[in-house]
Image 1 (cartoon, rainbow, N blue to C red):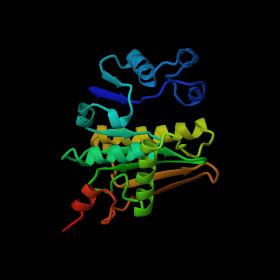
Image 2: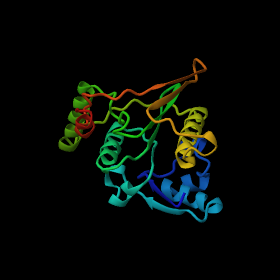
Image 3: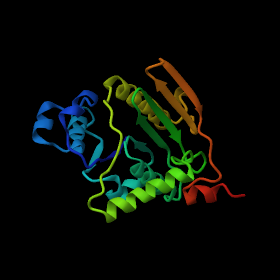
Length: 220
């Protein structure tokens, strides 16, 4: 890895300490930026990597971020995921996407190379997409609108599994087939902690995807 761009607007909080080895109580007490804490940790064992920090929302990331050869997504916001997807599709080249997500008792990792595979929002329904856009309008126009997002305890074992799966899928792209370790784009891995179950399946491309760039690429 020659260059690594880190994008996150948030600061380290005590509740983050159970799921990131780079965060410390000192970071939480000082309200350190997450990207700065991770960059400092990386510098101790990967000093040759050019780590660039962007303490902003992904929607505000500078254009050079999208010059990346691979994008690793770890967000808890559908709008952020939608924006990443649009930027990758608009790059005019195939950019691998590794997307890690968590629920109450499960985690999943998707490995995609849109538009060759499905994109990040191929599984979204038109109704969900419309509700998401309507929420954006309400938040931007009504200062009294209250964001209602379900919250739940973050289990460190789940975030650890999600991170491990995402790292292994990323490594497959970096290895480029060396030693038989090749990427398998268009797949999803889902681990359910409650059922102790690991599922692997295909992420099907949607010819009627809500993302217009993806949809156009499916036309004969």
